[in-house]
Length: 269
Image (cartoon, rainbow, N blue to C red; front, side, top):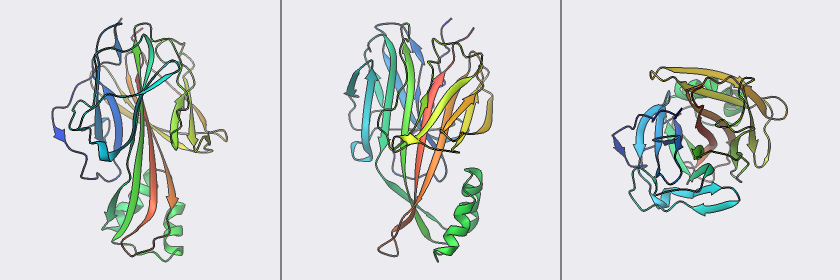
């Protein structure tokens, strides 16, 4: 049975205003398309698998590729495109859409917001490190970069996800469109090409009726976790890494957050 189309959010939002602690992901209008049919997908920024659509802005994009089999090519996008992905067709098999943003930054005007972010993303030790570095609790800047992937089944959807060279990324260990997921979906979180031990994976699961379930999972020493899957549901996986930065000026960022996201759907049984 075909995978249901996703709801497309109508709002146009140019990627210029940072949204603090919000996810960024690629959302196809349909996760599965017939051979020869167009592939369309939007950039999204928001929370709980819902948010604003973002236009493609070249100087805010460090990488925008599509991968089919062994072929890697740039997504043919123009400034202002929304949806950002508008392919007339794609080769049959598993299509991997990849987007990396340029660096952006935000200012924490309230310590409580940084505390909430650190606690939610399982980085509580950062709070003590922040104080130990002698950093201010208000008015400090964070830089961030987003790394998003999306898996789309074209025709039979045959193929496999893989590491695509992003600084941080989530890799699906099996194909959610063709493989048996009764035992869950194995994933691995990578940082600079190596497993990221103990990484937290936040999973957003959308049911056919639009209901959202959110669960947290912790990767093992090899950066691996097995996530429970349900037929007919859409998924957004998110994992964040945080690195300290040494500022040269008072207005320079003192932390760098790197956000990995992976979207896909599980076919109806």
